[in-house]
Length: 289
Picture 1: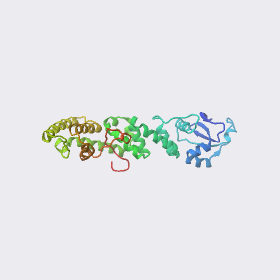
Picture 2 (picture 1 turned 135 degrees about the vertical axis):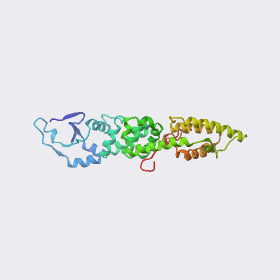
Picture 3 (picture 1 turned 90 degrees about the horizontal axis):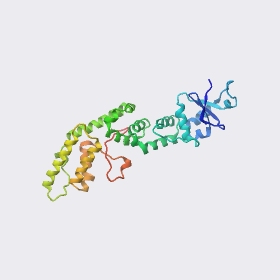
Picture 4 (picture 1 turned 120 degrees about the vertical axis):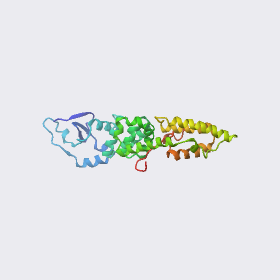
C-alpha cells in the first residue's frame, strides 16, 4: 500500500518520515525534538525502511516512524501550529486534540498554549473547559469553569458533553447544586438580618421595612425553578446595598451570611477587578468539593 504524502507538511529537506493513518509527513527532527522529548527519544530508534518498487528509493532511505493510533488530521493541525509556514491557531474545534497530542508526546509549549487559550476563552464554553481541565489537571481552570457550569447546571446536564466528565465530577456538581437549592429553602429574613448595621435614624421602623422587603425577595428566590446562584447573590446583595448602605455590611456581614447558608461564593478570578462582579458557587479538583 502506497501512503499519501501530506499536502502541507512534506518538506524536501526533511530528514524524518512520520506516517499517520496512511498520510506521510516529511519533517525535520531538530524542530520536533525541540518541541517534544518523546519525539527526540523516538528518533534515536527510527530506522530507514527498504523501499518498494512503487516508491522512490531516495525518499525511503529516510528513517520512518508510524503513529497508527493518531488522527492524521489532528496531527497535521498540531504541525501547522509548530511550523511557521502554515500557522494553525488554537480553537474550540481543535483544542482537545492539541491537548491530547501535547500530553502524549510531551509537547510542553503546545500544552501551555492550549491552557492559555482555555484561560482566555473559558466563558465561551465552560463545560468543555471543565472536562479538559479535569483530564489534564488544570486545577485553577477547573474551579473557574465549575462556577459557570454550576450557575446553569440543569441546562448543562442536558448537553452531551456532560457525560464526558468523570462520575466524581458529575456527583460533586450535583451535590453542590443540591446544597444550594436546599439552602434556599432554609433561608429566612429573621435569621439573615441580625448583625447588620442599620444606617438609619429610625432603626426599628427601618428594620421592619427591611425584613418585609427581604421576605419578599426570599419568597421569590424559593419559587421553582430556583434562580441561578449568581442571581441569588446579586438580588440579596442589591437589597442590602439599597436598604442598609453600610460598607461593613457589604464587605463583611454579607459574605458571612452567605457562608452561613450557602458556604463560599466567589467571583471569577478574571472579574476580581470589577466594582460589582457576579458571585458563584464552585467545586475544586483534588480536594474537598
